[in-house]
Length: 225
Image (cartoon, rainbow, N blue to C red; front, side):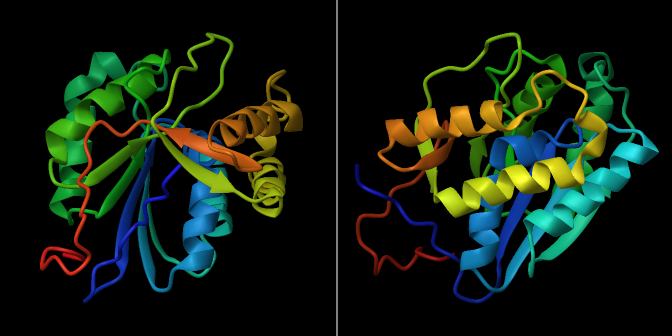
């Protein structure tokens, strides 16, 4: 399998938009990718957007953003749209994302998947490409009892150390979720091990990418812009 690198702009930090419907979505789906990005790149600018959540859950989200992105320049935007009802407030979701876009277009978007069975995740995923048309966008997966896991086209390999750190931070940053029967090490590591097997890595997170550009000439003038 041929690896493809993420090329940072020449004249500014790499900018990333990480977006989730609920606190913990981003970290479950892409926590390892965020840890890898923050460890391997300096400087790095990340905008962290969560559309729902109680005050308690918002505290967890802020703590998680700092923990999963050590050393990065992180801006956290937390909203209080009705959880489980995002399809019914489609216009609010669209307006919120357009406000985010007005502040700047990111190089990379990490967001939920259009094939996700959860209506909140799916609503955001369907609106994102109508707002951000020039960014590389990858869609994470969140395991759930609905059984909506599918074939993926893009993988971020994770070392064993990074995977263990991800699980450690999930437990530390989201104590409110420990009562859930699916919130355990085996679920998180099992899926990552399966995805790692698919890309011949110890562990991995898997994503959809509906559109990307492959530069075959590294001296292309558009490279890094």
